[in-house]
Amino acid sequence: SPPPSGATVRPGLRVRAAAMALWWRDLLALWRLERSLVLGALFVSGPAWAVQHAAVANYPLAGESATRAGLLVLTIAGSVAASAVLALPGHLGRQLDPRRAPFTPAARASLLAAVAAGLGLPTLIAVFAGGSEGPLRLVTQLLAASAGAAWFAVGLGRRTDADRTTYLWWLLVLCGLAFVPSPGQPLGALALTALAAWGTSRTLARARRLP
Image 1 (tube, rainbow, N blue to C red):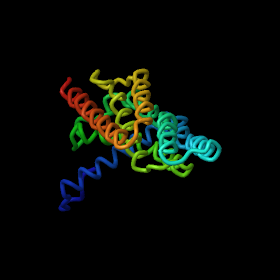
Image 2 (image 1 turned 90 degrees about the vertical axis):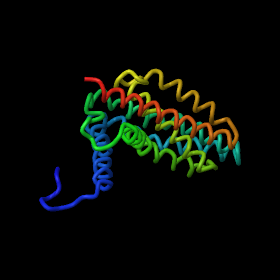
Image 3 (image 1 turned 45 degrees about the vertical axis):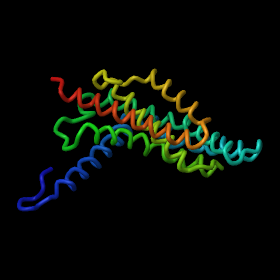
């Protein structure tokens, strides 16, 4: 809605407000239309903590091995959050990326990734609390999974149709990356995040030019 008559709103503030509104709109759409996916993304943190805690306490795992286990558990359990984002295009259609929105396709791509990251954050916290080390490595792994979910949600260049099946290959790459020691894992995860962000932005920019 427009500001009151005579009021002045800084352009940056307007963009941030619109971005938060769209991010919240996405979450509300998922809650109303795919509530089971949202609840699953939140409740999977419990089993993720249990698996990580059991592995650390019983094997036992420590140091690099505990970190690798945490990355693997986070990737597998976090796929529930990704599946929620992959469901967005089917429900929102052309409103997935409103053409009149006051931000670029790159900003919209980051918002889609932020939806996945927000839903996956409880799992990250649970895995870390379960005994995983390397919190920064967990964060980079979640960023790569979230950015990939946004990319596959818009269909890898095919307008805005979710490509759910192929996302499994992205998860397999991330699972393999979990076994790469530092600094290879965080650098690889950041590279995948950048690739996915570029791909999502490119797809959305192309979709905006279509009639």
